[in-house]
Image (tube, rainbow, N blue to C red):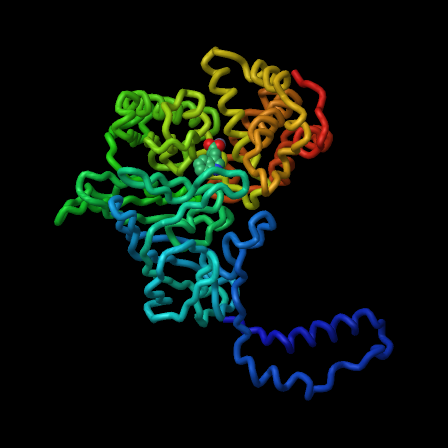
Length: 480
Ligand code: TRP
Ligand code: ZN
């Protein structure tokens, strides 16, 4: 246990600093008299300070929190689609990374009825999307917080050029897609991909409704008094935005991929006709990526097609979701590639989003190439020919917070990878992808780390290539 006395150590640091600068002669200004520091010594037995209200991502200053790292979430939640009412308890296991007098969690809406820290009632308050918990924890303490809460979830509507996201109530349940910061619309969390954790879900819904979360069912669903409870566990670290609690009427097919990976596929009754195709393609494509990118990082794969007309898909960990359309092979290949790029390897800051979307888009090109439809070079040529000025004006290597999911992050991000492949050759490019995935499995990554690996692989500097494709606001020359 390390207790720092803030004010006093600050004075010491200042003194030490001026002494070292002052050669061996007398310091130009005298050290503070001892009396000046005594009040603070008397006041602070411990220098516990507040955890910050954000994790430090300049794009979303309120997202995530400072002062602790979450290791595990246990979400015991009941959802009633008829009343659009969600309630229950979130248990969050975490480690303090500083002495903490208080810390925050991200939570939007709901009434919080009770908070405990290590079993004892804790004071808390709410302000905006922050839940503040008052406590007294030492640096490196492991602690357990429970938050009891209930209410009607309010999804995030159309900020940062995004559609509606988070916990979206539907006619028969919920459609839950939380990228980039919608986890706070359904559970209290450190809502930022830099803090990944494992998850347990205990989800209760009316009988006849299916509750789908990440990972695997740990027991058969149990019905009692008209309510069915589903126990799911994601045993690998997961970013909060990839957590899901999708509920409703679903047809389900389970089994194994040809390569032996368990597959869970579910479709809203409106999409029953695509269940077998979703099951088969998801298994087949997961097997394929396991050969190209290295072993599948999770224990099961699959997909969910819901009737909520989102018009988009999200790579929810182990269970990508498709909102209101029949997914083709290309989008299934995209969402499943995210299991490696985005989910196992997660970004540290949102500015690096091309590490998710550029890679998943390049995977679409690889899928077509591997199936003899068109080469990645064909796809690159077409993207280059179709590119508008907007694509060249938006450098994907540093996304814009108000336009995070710009087409450039996807397409020019994929073009950057193709340019790299052309520059270093297939013999180096594909092993490099596998090394990237293996070196950072279940972790967090940055663009700088990727560039470093690329240069190490190439045995030469690639600054010009990455500047041209990721960072400059001009059209690079065609490659290939
Ligand atoms: N990551 C998704 C994809 O490329 C797109 C996406 C961004 C999204 N934000 C979202 C999907 C919010 C659903 C909800 O596949
Ligand atoms: Zn994507």
